[in-house]
Amino acid sequence: MARSVWKGPFVDASILKKAERARLSGRREVIKIWSRRSTILPQFVGLTFGVYNGRKHIPVLVTEEMIGQKFGEYSPTRTFYGHAGDKKARRN
Amino acid sequence: MKNDSRILLGEIIGAFGIKGEVRIKSYCELPEAIANYGLLTTCDRKTVLLENVRSTSKDQLVACIEGVSSRQQAEGFIGAELYADRSSFPAPNEGEYYMADLQGLQAFDRKGNLIGEIVAAHNFGAGDMIDIALANANKSIFIPFDRESVVAVEIENGRVVLDPPDGTI
Image (cartoon, rainbow over all chains, first blue to last red; front, side, top):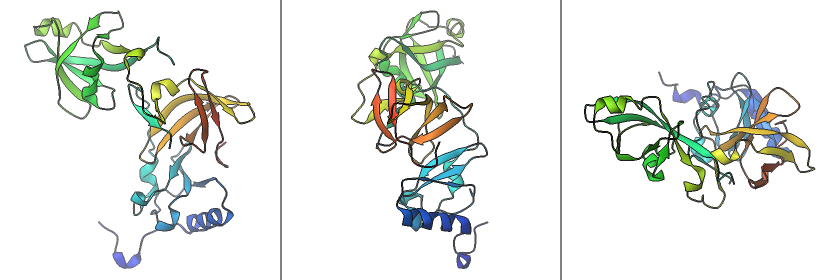
């Protein structure tokens, strides 16, 4: 069931605090978070969060397309390594 | 570049129908692209040429093998892994690297200290990242695969130079 609109998006307060601190400091850092249930807000765009997957923190660089999703969606808890095949990685 | 190595591109997982077709699990970015690499080889160095490749599900294909016309013959290939020569891969675009090339590279920091070895590259929807097994600890870390964090990629020398963001190591 969808969350009521009048409540607004859910975000753990600790994430708001950490994001604000990182934005003010201007340092290039990975903000370690454990709250996978928090919604990605517009003020997080451009920041890199390390989202815990139960074992380690997965770096998630927030872009505009991610707004409204949950952090946990970008940090899978079961990693299938598979085979590289002809897959490519792009260095942006 | 590791041109002398063979890269695993797929695996024959079963026979399909009675005309000698096989089911293939493809590890390529676009599953059908497995047919673009021409002659493939198996573990025991048999050559396989795939024809009439078509997709059946997300990463599974059905294809004919040249010279195979019956189900019994096709069943003889079940379990065969299909390799392509690294030299047959097209050159990647600027800023792109084959994940197979990145695996096994040594990672150093800007001062030349060894950090670890790249064990895999992933993309979980938030950009490419490399998985580095740390040299001095029994664990691995993820580093974003961007120009700020990965300063240089020297595949010929078997190394990458990292400048990981604060809080990753």
